[in-house]
Length: 214
Image (cartoon, rainbow, N blue to C red):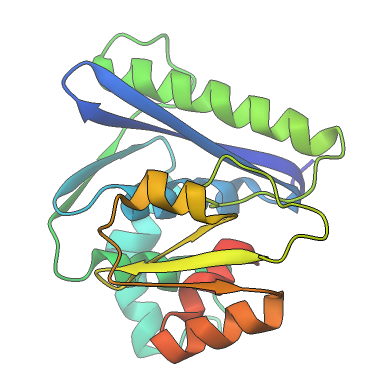
């Protein structure tokens, strides 16, 4: 259903012909939130100029056509209703500032005639796999850059890192080192959710953390 269990998939071209797959899921979400989350994760993982390929007209239009009007009206629609998914949209807009980002629309559920369509099919397959995990009772795991799982009773709840004002979260220091490779501007471990939010607030990236963890 929509809302219901959902997943997202991201395919990142790390070098010509080489790709990285990322994904996450939520047992209670919507298609639009998962599509937006995929874009958010892609922008977090790829620094500098980037081309975003998506089959979601809603996402592309929201970010390139509608967002400026929503911002001017205080994040309400022309009907005076609160803009849906504004937490994710705000987090994405923050990552778009000061960088060249091109959005390319592809037809959903195509047969893969072009390279973009073929990669979109792979992303869709990962999204379906993640959705099935959510439907099977797996807890929410959305926009976490780590592949590790939280350790029950562990001393660390999350490791927060900041690189060029982009927030990344991990489950332990080993994962942090693997992904960040010494390039984080700031990093700190949090023992619980409240401490994580306090750190994010201190760094001025609380909106990003809210979008990541819900």
